Length: 177
Ligand SMILES: CC(C)(COP(=O)(O)OP(=O)(O)OC[C@H]1O[C@@H](n2cnc3c(N)ncnc32)[C@H](O)[C@@H]1OP(=O)(O)O)[C@@H](O)C(=O)NCCC(=O)NCCS
Image (cartoon, rainbow, N blue to C red):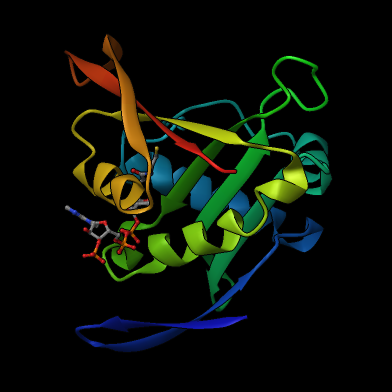
């Protein structure tokens, strides 16, 4: 689907869709760029190469819902909602979520749009409780998640070590009935 973002230097029409095997190279480039732009994701400069077969398996897995935004051939945003313990009798209702957007495309509503898209799939994945770990200084993601109805459930002191400093981790949770 097309989604128009409004930038100060003009509108950009993005294509938002589920990624497939033809998007693997774009995904690798995207992850490399995200790793250079922010310390707020799991990815880091110099991490091991992404395994193609494993990644395609993840995109196709029934307990995951992934959507990416493209500006032409370039992947510029990515969100994945997943059941953390699919089918488990005690833990099957738990889920996680991560959303990454290239810096140039942040702050213009794309994160909100990606959240709206995956919220529609929570029930399909059998999830009721979504939990997200966020760096305590990630104001944009905290604002986005709070706006989407997540609440801070706990704070883990010094869970991250970034640029020589320990940073707290906020665990935000949302229940879906
Ligand atoms: C966090 C992230 C997903 C947010 O997406 P986004 O497209 O920038 O967010 P949106 O433009 O949809 O804004 C959503 C809300 O967040 C808030 N927000 C966004 N950027 C903000 C900023 N820099 N400072 C404070 N609040 C901000 C706004 O309140 C906005 O609500 P509004 O529309 O009422 O103004 C995106 O910035 C990103 O990918 N950052 C780098 C990677 C990252 O931190 N990922 C999360 C890992 S857990």
